[in-house]
Length: 110
Image 1: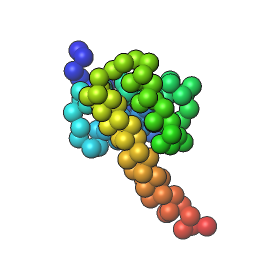
Image 2: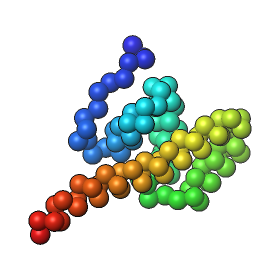
Image 3: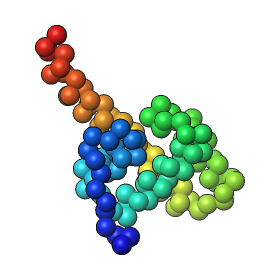
């Protein structure tokens, strides 16, 4: 069954699990989730498994240039990859907001 989402532990520390949870909270289609995860994994592997939240515009530019020159992918494929990578930026801001909301009550007790 390729069209059934598998459950994800909400307390998982893995980047891809947290990214999938973000996509699901945005109520994106399962096909979009699979496509975005595919391109994010390609991006991470292209940069030697570096954390994507620590990478910037230069790394995105390098990856998209690699797709166009080395892999010779179509323009629409590059747009899909760029949409997936821009979703990481939104995910980083979202996870930072969630983290600060969790940490704020804990610092109140100190």
